[in-house]
Image (cartoon, rainbow, N blue to C red; front, side, top):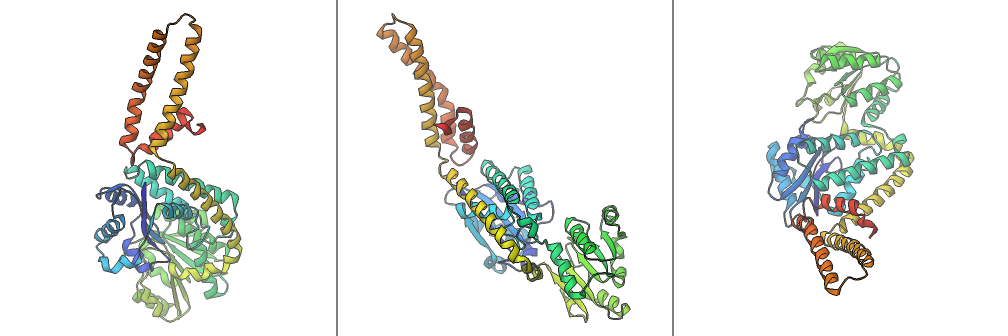
Length: 421
């Protein structure tokens, strides 16, 4: 089985590169379907988050999946290959298996232990499966990855020490203002990231929270749970003068907060500091506002310094989690190494032959006067029946060494208890 993962993440590529190659929410399944349609690719899954863009694929033998996938991303997004090729990493089967187990368990995240990534991986898998881009191998791999992530959560306290991107943003706000009591804030975007940021702001003492979303009803629902105020999305620019903190996760395809509007807000605020955190990919706040006096803007790449403060406590738990992920990866790799149709066929034939021999001997023991010729006839008859019964499943296994054989082998092992043999 030739598995490959090709991608870039927060360690290999800056945010301005990642945002060019990211897929909008809900578009990962269609992208996976297109990858699977490429020559030599049997299965695929696309994972796109604010911190990574990755393509998982099962390849035919001899296929250069790395080049085909990078070319696809370049063509799909209209970004010249020479601008992005240096940012990609590529991993083959064993390394790729270890990688997805670490990703699902939040060990490869900017903030180890953050809870969002597992949901994002599950969503990417669901979308790819709905589009029939995944097959037997990726089904097996990702379900095992989900189990590994669950085991990490239950056997370690890594999540207890994790700081999410939203929490890191609030920690940055504390460094700018000292304390947040009495500070007002607006959340642009009513998704999970925005809600987490709002809850952290409230816990830190922010006194007034406004929520904006392109869908006013979503903003109203979130504002109600937070005891905040919903505002129409088109009031954003005029509302800037009223707030100290702006946390933006609107997922718009362009900048929605521009320098001229921030300059105007600062004039009306008489220079009182404003703090902007842009956790959107693509970024939704023009980075030029950082040049304005008393305006502080941070994007998600700036959060690494904040989250580093908690590394000591997380390190022990992360080491435990790494050991779990590595053990599970080794077991999966061993399973894969033994996933060969020939041993399964041999074991199945031995199992059936043993059953045939046992039942035939039992029958012959009851017939005291049976002649050698009759005994030979029964031997030939039962052997021929077994051969005919096994012919179709054996043929199917041999025909599908790289495809549905995984499903067939697993089914046969369970149905006939072949593992015991």
